[in-house]
Structures are given as C-alpha cells and as structure tokens.
Length: 344
Image (spheres, one colour):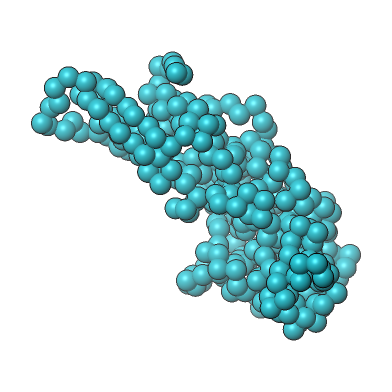
C-alpha cells in the first residue's frame, strides 16, 4: 500500500496517478466522504483519462441525493498551477542548429526530457494531444508551457498540423485544409511545430524574406515530397530557393527502418533507389529517410551548404532516453516536435 500526503487535492491525485503509471496499473478504487466524492471524480476527469484507467468510487456513509456544485474552471486552474510546481529533476533539452539566424528566428527540436507525462511510452515530454495517446490535455498543456518557457515563446502560439502523412501545406492566415503535414508563415507570434517519433521534422527558414516553415516527413510524406511542397509555398510568398535554410531533425535511421517491396517501390518511382538497401534474408528494404529528404531538397533548389543535417545525427529508435519512437515503443508512443517562429 502506498500513502500520499499533500495539502493540495490536485497534487494528491497526480501523485497517485504517477504511482499507478510507474507500475502500469489501470484500476482505481476511491472511497471518500459524501461531501468530497464529487470533487475527486472531477479531479480524475481533469488529471487522468477514462481511456487509460478504470474508476470505481464509493461513498462512506449515507450519500446525499443532492449533488454539490463543482467550480470546474477553478479546479482546472488549481490543477494547472499544481502542475507548474512538479519538479522532474530533468531540465528541458532543446537541440538547435547554428544555421538558423537566432536574431530573426527562434527554433529547436525537443526531446522527451523534462515533462510531466507519466504513462509508459509517453514519459515525460509528450507534446501531442490526441485521444488515443491517453495523456490528459492539461498535462500536454503543461509540457508545451515548459517548452515555451525554455524556448522563449508564448505557449498559446504553439501551432501543430493535422497530420495525414501527406504533402499538403497550410499557409497561416488562409483557410485550413482538413489535413496537412506542412505549414509556412510570414507572421510573427506564431510558432510552427511539426511532430516526430521516427518521422523527420524539417525546419525551413528564409532570413531574407523572413518566412519560415515546418514539415512532418515520414516515409509517406517523403515519397509524396512534402519538402518540395513547403519550398513551393515559400517561393509563392516571395522566397528565393537559394536563400532558404533547412534543418533535418532526429528520426529513424535506415538500419532501424524497413519497408516491404511494394512500399519501397514508391521510392524507386521518384528516382530515390539509392536510399534503399535490399535485405535478401527478409525480402524487404532498409530505407534512409535522411538521405531521401536531402536529395529532394537539393533537387528543388536548396543549396547543400544551406542544409544542416547535424541535428539529425540522432536515431530516435536507438536513443530511448532522448526520443520517442513508434518503431520501438509501438502504442502508445509520445511525440517530440521541431518548431520555428519569427521574433516580434
């Protein structure tokens, strides 16, 4: 039996949640007096998720027929303030490229270190909220707040794509497509952020036109040439391809990523056979997504000296202490992000 002590009710629930998550436990039985049981229910709804846990509640003594009013807005604010105080003993680590001019842009690639996510596979700086991830939204908000504080931008500016593993690019200030994997902007105060967990995050910056963009480029995004589409959108905004700087974020190395013959053929179809290595034993192909994206960038006018791949020297699969990985962790897995924005 584990006992938790705190003067803060939200902290009590969160401490219990972390204890359960560390042990991969999902069944929770809460007993409480009648005047508190509804408050505990509300807190579990905020700080936990029914998709991850099975809750049972029991009232001690006689239950009242009148359900007390709960100030959910105030309770949520209490939870937010509590999460700010959680000490992870791990500072946020952001990988940056010396290629991007820091007087014009702020940018970086996050790692999995320094957040408050505690579910296995999502520890600890998961930055993507979708229902199947099982991280409560308020936890993701706190993780984003911590990254924003470390990266010196406003958390509410953190703008993410509606990923479909395709090549659609959205320009801020225009109507949003239903799905898109790339974004570009010339607006200040917007932090463009692309998710990754083996897929590559590409960051684009034009210091002359003060235009920037990001792309989420997994194998499907690579063969549909999402990088080409971001470059095209930036040139429509006035950029010259020779002025565009590009960094490639951490992703899965070719030695850790394979595709079957049918999917590998799609790389051959766009003249990227050199990015494939046939594995005769298993009749599949190892795929070098870094090399493939470099080739696509150079084909579309990006100068080799304007590409920084040193930020991509980490394999997400081989570095479990630093990065989330779908290939390695399966479901659920967390997401790191590559981000960029224009200084005001």
